[in-house]
Image (cartoon, rainbow, N blue to C red; front, side, top):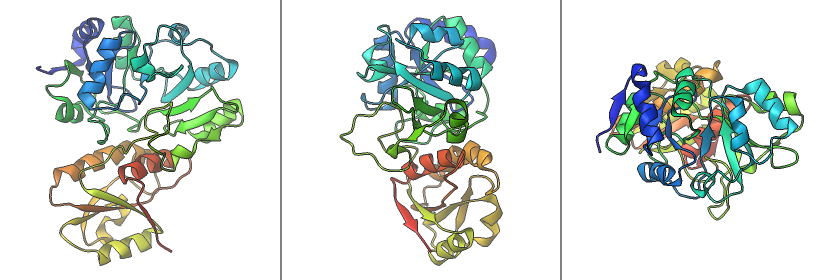
Length: 338
């Protein structure tokens, strides 16, 4: 299969491919998604094949207008409506009981469906032109860092999918926040650009699922993408150091070796004696979110790096989302240094 790289002006070609059972990588404000017709189980199964994704990992369905949610869900409760009015279009995914139109390939056999209305205009225009909702996980090889540019997608998916629609660099850089409204109170399953505090300001109490910050047993059935398996990992072994910046610098410098690297803040590069990769400023968690996956992909380009020590970000606000991705990249290996 030859993967076509399409420009924004070729959106009609992308829509045609999707309407005819194809798989197209699409831009969103979070990361690039690997899209197929959400009502076509066979087309959706091609996503799992291209990614090497486990079939028990559900997908998110993307829509172009809030009214489209009614064909996807069995009910649309008041709290869900409040969240949609406040945060859509945007980086928020809501899980609700599914309608009969959702095939099991999308829901991983569950009775729920995850729905999102992206803020990326090209993504919404494509969904409108295709005339169908799009099931779309991140457009990377399963377990590897998510793509935030069309070039990242091409690196992972060339020859595996029909096309890539180039919509520039993603503005958020991490996958969407995921909340389920099927529990009482609602539960945050994956942190992202919409924070726990923001959710609670709209609908009151929201529980935090244990899987957000801790490892989930592989036998557990999960209802959201990104909860169960090791994700976002470069080829090198990642170890998180939970400590002050000063102690991080000291620890890494004592581990100095040509095979060792540091994943650190911009401000600390000049004080570290090993190879460095940065993911933004310690003062700017939004920038950390936007650049984390880029940094993890840069690490993969240096084959000499075998171990990466990563500075632990904040676990509050959008920092929780950054930590959530980083701890999965590390396979939950964290060293606490006092």
